[in-house]
Length: 126
Image (tube, rainbow, N blue to C red; front, side):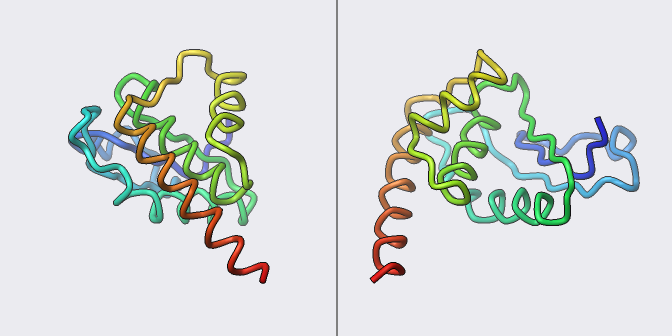
């Protein structure tokens, strides 16, 4: 699949043996729980994905099950860099991986992130 970048969102980092030395890797420590603050990872994850895309790279974003943590960061990226609403981002992601479902706390965090981005874009356009 010509993956050039891997974003791992897990409680502990994956073994270095599993990642080719030519692949850029970012590990973000996060738990799939309602007490986890994913917003602290939004900026770094979005920047990592955007840097990869700007260099014509291909990014794999993963967590333990590929349902909540990884989809939350992908939604944040689509909100930030593609000006999608949360609903549009989720629909877009589900068209590619039907089981995605950020947990309820992550959805609330995405709502706030979306509102903040909309306000920032409105100020920049004035």
